[in-house]
Length: 101
Image 1 (cartoon, one colour):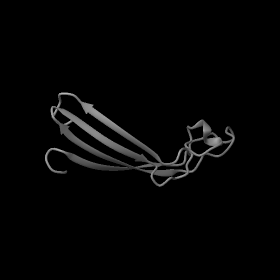
Image 2 (cartoon, helix red, strand yellow):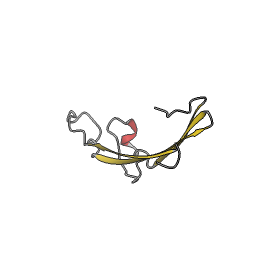
Image 3 (cartoon, one colour):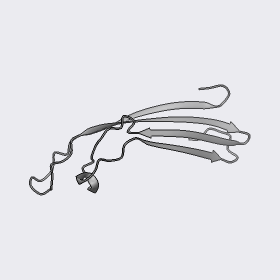
């Protein structure tokens, strides 16, 4: 938390996926891909601006750039899933100086 009513938060998550082992034998082109783990982090800044309220955030997914193939992805036969993914967003609430949910 920073000074005044401006707030700063950081969240982390790990998505762990096991290898799909409930697959009919001999009905697919290849074996199921191995399991994988992905690391994600969110950084959020929230502050009042007059009568309004603003949130600014950034999210990073697959921060370790893990090469993986999801069993339900049709492209898994040809290519790995995407690597590092960064998302930046801004939320602006007009006339709502109270904290956002």
